[in-house]
Amino acid sequence: MRVVVAGGGVAGSSLALQLASQGVEVDLYDRMMSYGKACGDALTLRPGIEKLVEETESYRGEVGRYTVRVEGREVAYVGLGRRNWVIIDKRRLVDGLRGIAEAEGARIHYRPWAGEKGDITVDARGPYAWRLRGSVMVYRIIARAEWERDHALLDFRVSSRGFYWVFPADPEGKMVNIGGGFEEYPKLGQVKASVFRYARELLGGFEVLDERGAPVTVKGPILLHDGEAYRVGEAAGLVVSTAGEGNRPAILSAEALAGAILSRWPGDVLGEYRRRVSGLIAEVRASRMLLSFVESRPREGAKIMASLPTAFWRDYFQSRVTLSRLALQGLRSPRLLGVLPRVLLASRS
Image (tube, rainbow, N blue to C red; front, side, top):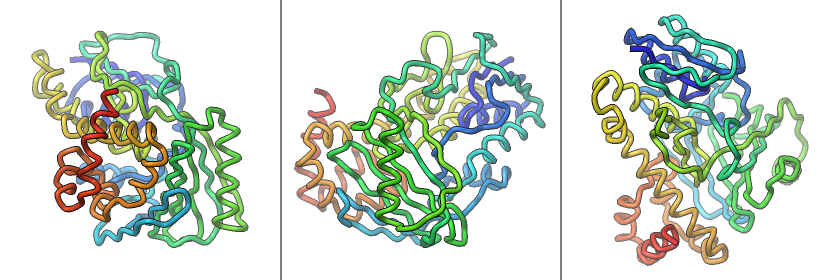
């Protein structure tokens, strides 16, 4: 079997590694010799993901405490007693995955994919590969500033249809990662100005060490196969839109597709892939339903977000928000239960 993978980001490199390590012939295409996309420096841990972080030596720190703000006002605090988010050097993670895949026998071609086909072809390219419909521009800076080394802050700005994030960029609390993305600001310069303004308000003085911007696809269609190629990660629309989280879905979808290929080819690979990734799809769909509801009713949405129970935010930071879990939480929170039918109706409209 020969597998061609277009795109060597988190999803494509993870997939190449997993297949090559099982003896599959893999050709991976990417235009960049070293990964350089902005953002995506936090990663929700799972057993297999933790192993990849260790093998690539990309660990920078971890987060166990979370503060939630809505329109600048604190509404929730969550403390988790075990490892949950790790802060990573994403360039080191991706370059490390490529290196391990190559050591396992994968062939990496540092040039744009020109439509080469294999027995199985996989599209793992991000939003640069097609029109940016469904994407949001994000900007982040790494700054030298004092920040609690295990503390993250998310500040949701419903009126701007986006949020700011702040979390440590090193294990000593001497560097901070601060950024944001908003549908209200379609141009990168607008997002950059907003992020710098927020950083000055929150941190006061700081020294910028690195800054980058990029589009993130948060509303692209969920598409596991486009008629010619399988898709994983951002290319498949598997981004948790309410958090902009793409790293974990990228790795998990790559793991699911690799498992489907190894267990079913030349049989029903797509059906097995869909089965293995169904939990992730449920999470992505729930996030889009919530986002659709909040965007369609910004004033009401902001009030509801500000009154959500701590249990919701605990699930949110552990990447466990699905409609079934929301329904269970709704039994304990009448306000949340009353919102769920409207969330479903808003998403369908």
